[in-house]
Image (cartoon, rainbow over all chains, first blue to last red; front, side, top):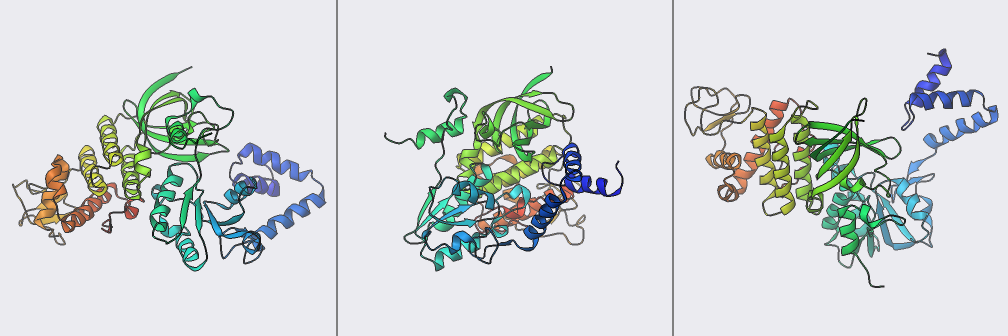
Length: 198
Length: 249
């Protein structure tokens, strides 16, 4: 145990996800020896993230204003909405530079084992958005795991009655750089059923 | 180096660190096992998709200091594909997994019957031949029997007098005769008790002919019995989609 403020800092850092006691100690001593200007910048960034960041009224993504940068951008196609679980998934799709539409962040996936049902997610907001706006395509980009697939299944059921709406799901298949013999049956099965003519 | 191998069903997964997961399985020989699957959240993982909930797998474990480590996995039955494709089956399947997790409280204690019950229930849900709500109720009744809490349906739960009896008491453990009837006992329809008996014994033609009212009442009584014995609410039960039939909370 260290004295007062150092131990307090180690304890606080240790509460962050993925930071164990050893890492917390290492970061604390790094901060102790850091330039005061760097510490002031970190302090400001921490304060700003809590006070200045809100969730976008339209899509639920993190934003500095009531409406996020992507929803404000008139060049983005309002007819195409990509549904993701978390704000970090928006960034992952943006990095591809392939998608020019807008997003809808659900805030998680359906997980009855953790008590998360449709009412705990932003499903109602998605349905309202599709009813009100000129949305022609919804891309379901939930995670390719059990909860993400079940969420996509549920959304397909809720969206199929909207006239003129196309609902698509991200393709699923084999990753680059792998060996076929190591592919699991589920992924290989999907890669086969979703094969395309070349 | 201590390795062991077993077959099991993945009950739940929890994130651990950057890309690992803690996998909880109910296994044939070693009961409930919690083990670490390293790197399975990466898209390049060799067995990430095999250790998802509902998967019936053949696993090799390495005995660790606190938690064992999963080193190899092979799929026996990919129940997940059939269950995830239907929301009703998915919510019923989650309730099956959570019940199995609660009933196999001790890690390492063999629970062969529960393991067989879970695989049977998941197989029925993945097939989609039977109503998912009935499959779930049949599983819950049989799982309670495994735990020693089989509800009395044909006789009085207290004095064993042959029935059928009209009253049903959750704290007493099933139907009760007029002499043993405690205050506050419910009076379910006779069809409901017939349905519960059919589900417990696997008489599917009788169970499938039951009316919607009997199914709704039966589901409510079964959920109440299970949660009374477990002394806690199951998170997944209120979220079970029963085609408009409330889950009986």
